[in-house]
Image (tube, helix red, strand yellow):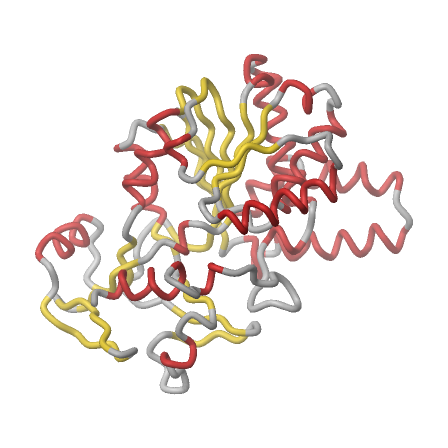
Length: 328
């Protein structure tokens, strides 16, 4: 099978890695910005609030998360919006794009733990089911979880019984890669369809997403396996694919040039592409921390400040992760 089919089976097939809830953070295989600090979601919500102030019709729109895990990010955003303006939770509508029913139930359970019956969530199996006048859509680390093909020197990867083999590449695959001056590395599959689906039913949209990667390809492999915070490049001799298959996470650096191209072709306009550090500071992260300092103990302030350093430090998440904001 092609590598994209293999990766799809690894992550989303029967008993695939994402078919059950995985711990995120210290007890899991990896950290995310969401698991690092609730101020991540608060900062994005702060940005959304500014957009609402600029165009008041947005206060009657939707806030929707894609790839929500248990719903931590969405809840952190709702919490901060309530802090800024309690009336917003009455006018805004909230949704999650999630096709697995058992995951939906876990999300509803967590949201009830956070807010009781005060917040109502609508679930959508696919983003193309969202047919609304306006939506602010947010996602964290979803583009790196799209299946990808692997290419090098005119060949592409196929997998047989957890063994990677190289064969002559499909002409269309090489033609697409050449538009990005790519001869080696990962070529994501599905960005175009996702962008088209998002634009299908949402008349006006702000889409904000964070992920790790660059705007231009490096012409090298970044694909790797994460297991209990240990990283194994796919072609590492120590990595045994038959043991990691469906048991560990598999991911790669995002080609944001490809993401931007897919969304622009679907009718979106690129509003901003920048590092996570610049985006969060622009969204108001430091201001939020200063407000927190006025009502928190010194020890709690120091603890949260340390978490925020993880989000914006250049050597940790700050520069490696990027934010992309599209408008339609």
